[in-house]
Length: 490
Image (cartoon, rainbow, N blue to C red):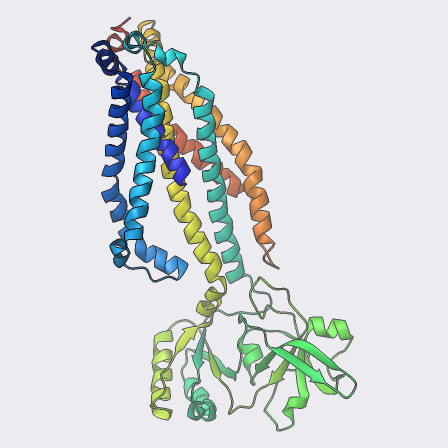
C-alpha cells in the first residue's frame, strides 16, 4: 500500500508539473541551471508531502479504536509520544517527497527550455502503457479485496444461520457459577416455566454449538474408544430442536443413569448399532440426528452424549418465544440474587456465543473492508493523476476536435473509452485471482458457502462505475474548456 501511495503521489506531482512547463521553461531560458530546477521540484515535493503529516496523524488518532477492536490490541494516543512513531512518519514523508522530487525533477531538468516552452515534451513521453498498467494493477487489487469482503461476510452468515438439525435461536443461557445455584437449578427452572413467554428450560454442562471439544472415552476391559462428547440434562435435546430418530431422550436422572448414553447418527452408522444395543458396555438410550455441535470449521464427528446430574449443572438454558426476554432475564437475576447473593448473574443469548466462533473471520472482514476503502481511495487518486497527465497531453487535440465541431459527449466518450479498456483488463486479471484465493480460504471450513457469480459481478461493476465517474468528471471539465485557450500557443 505504501508503494502504491508513493506512485500515486508521483503521478499527481507529475500531472501538476506538466501544467507548469511554460513557467519552468521560462526559468531555464532566463538562466536557471538544471540543478536549480531539480532543487525546486524536490523542495516543492517534500513541502507538500510534509503538509500531509498533520491530517495523517488525525486519521491515525481516529482509527485507533478500530485498530484496538479489530486486532484485540490496546493502543492509545500515547503512541505519538514515542520517538519511533515520529521517526517512522518523518521517514515515510521524506521518502515519498524525495522519490517524487528526484524522479520528476531529473526528468524536467534534462529537457531543453525550447521543448518546455513549446510543450513538445508532452508528445515525447512514452509512459502511456506504464501509467495505464499501474492503473489496472490498482483496480485489480480493489476487485480482489471487494470479492474477499463479500465472501467473508457470506461465509460468516452461512456459519451463523445454517446449523444442521439444531436451533440456537431465542435461547438464553445463564451460568450457574456457584454450588448453591447448581443445587437449586430445578427451583430456578420451575419458577421460570411459570412465565408464559418461556417455552422450556433445561440444564447442562455444555450447550451446543460450542467451540471447545469434549473427548469422552468409553472403556471396557478389552478396549477404550474415544468420541466427541457432550454432557446434557433432561430436556436439553428437545429444547435445542434436536431430533431423536431412534429410541428416546433422557428422562429423570438415576444414579445408574451414566450407563445410559445417547449417540448421534455417525456413531450409529460406524458401529452398526440401534437404540437398546450396547456400545462398549453402555446402553444406547437413543440416537439423535447428526447436528453441528461446533462451528462450521469442523466436520460432524461420531458423538456420545452423557446425562448430567441435576445438581451439577453448570449452565441453564431457557427457550423463549422472543416476545419479552427482558422480563425473563430480570427473573433470572432476581432468583440468582436470592439463592446466591455473592454470585453475579450472567445471561447471554446462545446466538451471541456462536458469533464468537467467527470472531477471527469477522475481524479479518473488518480489516479487508478497511483495506478495500484504502485501496479504492488510492485507485481514485492514481486514476485522477493519470487522467490529468493524459488530458494535459491531449489538450490541443481536444481543442482541435471542438473547433471542428465535436460535441462535449463525443470528447468525454473518447477519453473514457481509453481508461475503461484498462479497467476491464483489470477485471479479467482479478477475477480468477480472487476466485483462487477465496477457494483456498474456504478450505478452512468443513461446511462452506458457494462462490456465487454475483460476488465477482458486483466487484467488477463497482470498479467500472468508480473509474467512469472519476474519468468523466475530469473529461467533462476538459471537454467544456474554451478551445481558444487550448490552441493559443499553436
